[in-house]
Amino acid sequence: MPKRCKVCGREAYVYLPQHNLALCKEHFTERHERVVLETIRRYGMFSRQDRVMVALSGGKDSVGLLWTLKKHGFKVFALFIDLGMGAHQERVNRVIERVAERIDVQIVRYSLREHYGVTAPELFRRHRRRHPCSVCGTVKRYLINKLALELGAEVVATGHHLDDEASVLLSNVLRWDDEYLRRQSLVLPKTHPKLVKKVKPLAFLTDREMRAYAEAEGLPYVAEECPFSKGARLKAIAEVLDELERVSPGAKLQFYKNFYKFKEKYLGEAEPPQLRECRVCGMPTTSEVCAFCRIMGKG
Amino acid sequence: MPKRCKVCGREAYVYLPQHNLALCKEHFTERHERVVLETIRRYGMFSRQDRVMVALSGGKDSVGLLWTLKKHGFKVFALFIDLGMGAHQERVNRVIERVAERIDVQIVRYSLREHYGVTAPELFRRHRRRHPCSVCGTVKRYLINKLALELGAEVVATGHHLDDEASVLLSNVLRWDDEYLRRQSLVLPKTHPKLVKKVKPLAFLTDREMRAYAEAEGLPYVAEECPFSKGARLKAIAEVLDELERVSPGAKLQFYKNFYKFKEKYLGEAEPPQLRECRVCGMPTTSEVCAFCRIMGKG
Image (cartoon, rainbow over all chains, first blue to last red; front, side, top):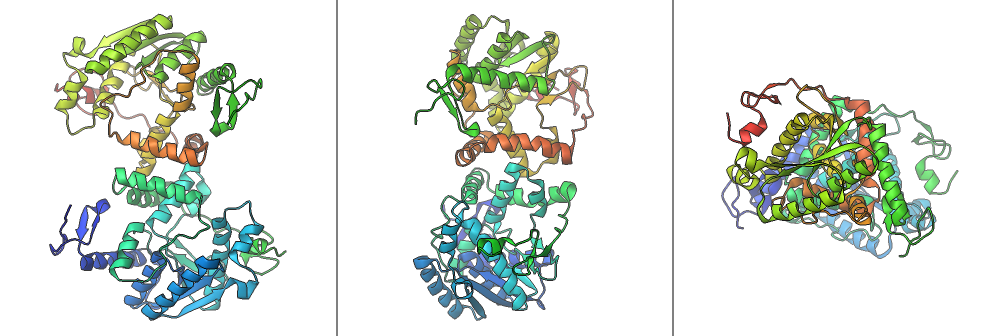
């Protein structure tokens, strides 16, 4: 059905069922960026004085986030980790080159192979019992934190969007895991000198909105899925949420937003965990050897 | 794949992925009934001295429940409400006749038309803005309670199974409705002289297990869905849970069971609501005129 932009009456570029809102390209982009900026402001994520590092994967979400932050005058740079994932990695690397041409920001490239002599697929083979997404997540979380510290960033912004966040939430709710529920947050504060603050400015925007934004702004991005992500439990949960959203538009956003009211009322904030220094690398961990060093086969 | 009964090694009748358990017909039936009896015992639902009324719809769940209770020596009878739902009702009524031949219990038939001069489809037409399931639910809850009192039942047992219960739970979680979450329970205690205790002995058994049980015991039941239930939100949510269960066998049961631990830790039990007597019928209600009388267009 043809829809008209609610703001200006022009032909709509996108219809957002969760808000019953049709918008032209211009007003969609405007609204989208306003949501990002309001999320940053309302949750005290960072100010225009902070040096912000975007964890850049090359997908539409992190590219879109980097673009929005740069466009609105934040002091931003990006970290891109080359995981050595074969032909897929080469396609990602070519996109990152195009992102670097398009967005006038520093993009720090960090190669896992150059620094650790190993690629992600080699690690997946060494840890067959774990899903590759779990291994890769541990490696990326560690390196993002470590490099943010080394590169002098006050805060790391990641491209997690509503679909990611709602999937993690549903996954934790399905087990009623109170510790994980308590830890779910838009902002992970700095709880240790060697841990950097982490924030999710896209948490109220859907996967579909991120795609529409990248297209509207003509941003280069990696459209293909990571070949190792097949069978990830969170992907199945995301599909389930999509189905719920189809039946009840707005269900995802309501589920995610209302959770924080419920959390505040009944769960409270998580206690910062007791941390010590990893025997191998010296980074903060709850065990003797940190998860990263164990994956790397050290210690 | 051919499976063997875990108890006796005979060819399996059913495989329950959530328990990684294959069972022959005999041992499946034995286990199934043990689960029902343990649920009744552990949650203090009723004893062999109590007069129990089963709310009988004619579906596999309430027929199976009635059969199990009778088989195990409970003082049980059934209430069957004829809602006047046209050709579907006639098929249901014929099944109820077969149930009466098969299970040696009293089945009280109560006709909505005879007592109130109206049929459920007429009520659906009068309340087009509400989903028929919502109208029908209000009517049935009211009449089941009223008739249990009149017929001298200490407790009403309903055929709600795990899929029903987990769907309601997920529906409430998606809105993080703390009041509804707090009220979710296997046992609704008697909180008023005119409200009868209500229990759900099938809450830990799946829809699929109920079907397998009815087939194993050769019970007559209505297999067709109610023609008015299309588009019910809970049906969509049940399908979503089926998909999750397919990906992670046992997810439904874990979600439902762990909720009660979480509820006990963080939410506690619901306060009994402030009740007064309906101005029209005198039954307990939170408003001036009860939901049933409003649906009936009285008061």
